Length: 457
Image 1 (cartoon, rainbow, N blue to C red):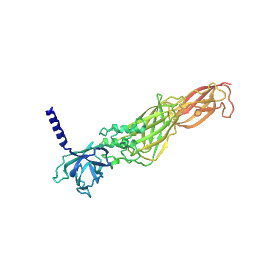
Image 2: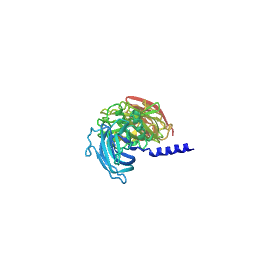
Image 3: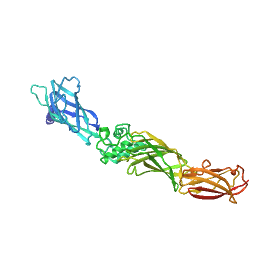
Image 4: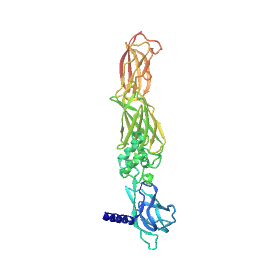
């Protein structure tokens, strides 16, 4: 029992006599490329500290030291001395501090605030280290206090890296487009990284810039002061929906521009009649070959966004081709309207949507309706090419009864009552014709087509 008490007493003495090391900590934090930020240097476990000297080392090619401020620690009278306190040479890789305390200090607290600006670095982590640390107690013997330095690490977030994996790839550009079109949502903390142009928020132009960086067309994003990207704002352009073509129940509708020069991205919203058309897909063209394209479609509203790594050449052309399935019975045509559009980040656009006539594969004269009729009928037809159209009506003996000169008609279907040829059952003198069988013949583009109709009174 006596031996046990002696051992215990010894342990108590040993524990009490152990000294606690002074700790100097540099804050670790997450920063964005190009950001100006502050780092705190913190002191803990000070024991009647009289003097502490240390270096804060950093890579000057990645970090620019802008300012040093002594932090206020409660009940602490201190003098802070730094190498080059007025200016900091751009090639300096460290700054030295000597913190002198006359009466000594015991406690914890922030002692220095460092302000840095980070460049367009491509390092995922950057160390800010504590070096040459020494501490002396405030006593006549100038007894050293054990000191331990803890370096900080800057975790760098890259512009364009919206997947936060430390890499910038075409997948990041695709994610930006999906966010813009509304099929996915980027987290709020990632959105600033997606705006690589530094203006107008996140849009397809940012996705295009990401692609350009991936393929090496630009080295640094505009938000970081980089050059070489196509202009964000372009001269005025004309954007239009061109005539559609019906092929096997599918309608292919081109979206054309009068001058594609400098265009590298776009955001186009269109409206169509969902009772007539069902959206199938959007296809790229020679102008947009290799571009990333995303879209959403709901209740007759279609939004298409696209981005590429190389700007389009000057000149007019077809940027995209939309494919629909024809589901309505009225094949005469329908409206596809461009509601709004943006190319790159800004351009005054003259938008032309309007009517789209579906173009059949062949020209044909169709059966009139009603048939038999009294006193009026409609004569439908379809044109594979625009042509001057004339319809002649003959009696059974071959005499001309009435000529319907329809003038020039664009290619398309003319089957509804509002577009088909109309005959009121009267001859050239305005007299109603007798009951019987009549022949009607359409002449268009050098060809003629013939059918019969019946008037029944």
